Every structure is written in C-alpha cells, then in structure tokens.
Image 1 (cartoon, rainbow, N blue to C red):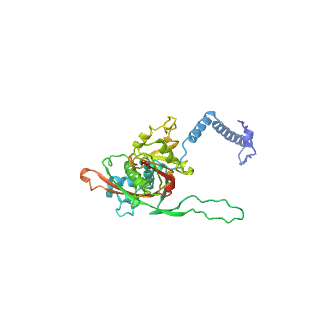
Image 2 (cartoon, rainbow, N blue to C red):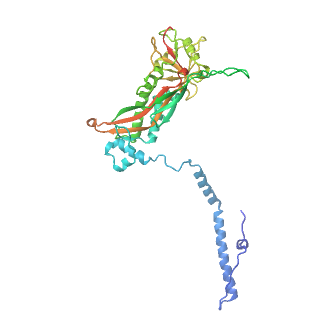
Image 3 (cartoon, rainbow, N blue to C red):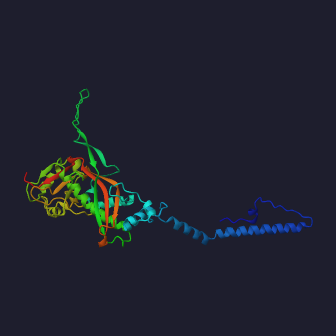
Length: 384
C-alpha cells in the first residue's frame, strides 16, 4: 500500500487565516498548523486502521460466508401461506373454522360444498399418484381447467407414393378424426383418527388421498368403460390381439411375436405391462441360448427389462388363464390422461362423531382414453 505524506494529504487545500485586531501573526500561524496537523494525523490513523490485515481478513471472511449461502428467491418456502394455514385449520375443525380463515379459502363450486384445496396440495397429490398408478409414468399427461378436452386422432400413417415429374399426384388414404377425453369425477372418504394429533394435517390427508385416488384411477385406466369414468386400455376393442399359442403356458416365442407385431417406430418406444404374478412366471423364461429374457436393472432408477424393453407392473391386469389378456405391449404415450387441477375438500366431523372420526370427502376430476390403438398389442391366452 502506498503511504501518503502530510503534504500529499493537504494537496491543494488552502488555509484561510483571519487576523484579528489583537492576534499575533506567529500565534495565528502556529495554531493553524497545529489544527491541520491534528486533522492529517487523524486521517492517517483511520487509513491505517482500514488497511490492517486483520480487519481485511475479517471483512473477506464475512463476504465469503455470505457468498456461500444458498441462493433463494427471497421467500421463505417453509413458511406456509395464509391459504394453507387456513386449509389446515379447516381439516382439523371443519365448519367451525374462524371467519378470517374462511376468507382465505376459495369456496368449491361442487354441489356438495366445501373449499378448494390450495393449488400446491392439488399438484402434490397428482405427483404422488405415480406411486399407486404406474401408467402415469409412461402415458401422456395433460392438465386442464375444462370439463373435457378434444384431441385430433390419426387413423394410419400417410400413403406416400413415388411419382414422376409430370405425372399426376395421387391422394393419400390417411384418415383423421378427433377424440374427446371427458374429465370424470371421483371422490373418496377418509376416516382419519390421527387427524387432530398429526403435526401436519395436510400431509396426512394428502398421503391418504394419493393412495385412494391412485388405486381407483389405476384400475380405471385399464378397465374403465368410458362412461362416467376414464376409458381403459383393456376395453378398447380397436387394439389388435396376438395369440399366445397355448391357453395356459407362456412362451418366449409368443412374446417375441407380440413385440414385433408393432411397427418399428412404436416398438422402439414400447413397454411391457403385466401384474406381479405374471411377471414372476415370465422371469423364469429363457431364450434359445439359455439366457433369461428378463434382465434386472444395473442402474439405480432404471426399470427392469424384457427383451430389452422396460416393464411396468400393473396389479389390475389379468392373471394367466384361458382367453385372458395378461400382457400388453405398446407405446403408452398413446394413452392420454387429463387432470383437472382443482380439487375440492369437504370436512364432515358429524357423521362418525361418536367414533371420534373425521370423514373427509375429496373430489377431483381425471379423464383418460386411448388415442392411437395401433400403438398397442394385447397377448391373448389362446391357441389361435
């Protein structure tokens, strides 16, 4: 660091000396120089203090500590909003909710009444559904605020043709259509003995909702009739079937035929679906080289594979039996799931009050349908 002299600190500063009637010139000059010297000494001391290595190290430590803090948005994410606080109180106390809490909630438009769950909770319930409804991990999922969504469909690939430069162009035979995916309503009752004692009531309710809704929709995505519920993959009659060749015994050859009956573009994105019982039997099958066709995953987070393609375990699929369909292979992105994000909650503390149980009615809407049946194949347990 460069040290400054007193002269340099003074720079071009001018000293104004006023002479009184009784002042001696020497005394005036001496006093002015003394005052100026004191000022310069104080400034030098301040500069030396700021330049002290210990002070600089302390300042650098503070800056480093500040820079190492996790970056945030300025919001306290752990601090619940007024709406979430009011909703937690509603779960505990029902219609005995304080007026100020009621004002923080949105009234549901459903005929049963109640309040809308906070958007964060609705999104978290949908996220947790994957654990109980595995088809969600492979299907195409969309969100909506409408009662139904219309999607365009395509019957087949285009009929492309080679033509000469001056020859007339023929027409392709591709067929287009549309499919309306209605958003149907489901509801569950939750008997929650631990509701009042739970440290986070919303978490307890959310977990129960995800489990109940997940199990119901997982079954509907496979077997739903499409009337007041989603349309399931297994009830779609447009999906082609492949015969196993035997009414009771699975064969490796049948699985290979099933897989390669799909066009290559769909086959390369396909996945197997079956229940745990069928999967247990299939794990014992070998190819002509004596190798198991089922392969465990060597990487965390990656699914098991059969003939190189991932496996989805769906508990609601049929067991192996004559004329049943225990296995489906296909590109499950051709199955469209539509979630309506809003979810209404009605707390009923009276129906089972004698049992000290709070019943919670939750209503959410979900739709599902097969948009392209050509992307799926079902294995039928039959000889032909």
